[in-house]
Image (cartoon, rainbow, N blue to C red; front, side, top):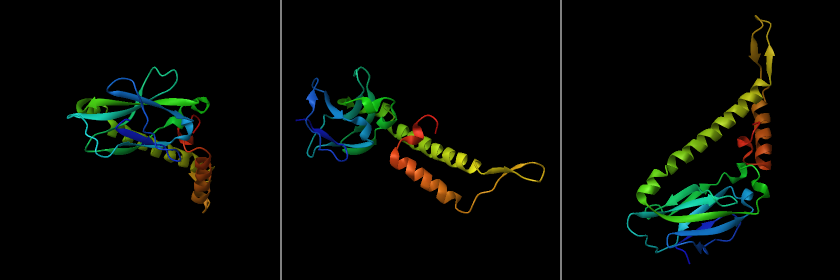
Length: 182
């Protein structure tokens, strides 16, 4: 049994990993488009070799390239990671993807620049929300009588209407903001 595990919400804990070699392990996740976040953790009382941590990767069929999701060290023995899989075109038709865990040096883990990627993703999401709101507000633009300048006159309930619309779209697809046309 491996010294780490993964939990996808609503699914059993995954601790049975197939060893590739002494430092690399894989398992499969079925219906990956349904997994928006996962928790990766070290099992209790696990001791990693000094100067190492574990990095979590995923690979899409045909499993030739790997993308990093996150990493753990003894100082950070667990983490929740956003997958972003639902934004990958064609993933809904993929029966499974592979997760890979690799024992890496702390230098390698540091160079993965994981904190920056999470911040960039949140910034992009906030930017997409702001763009969606601006597009909605601009739909109320009208020509004014004063010099033909454009003005935006909003109904008092415009923000409520936008929020209802946003919530409805989000319930249907939590990643709708990242798809083309949004």
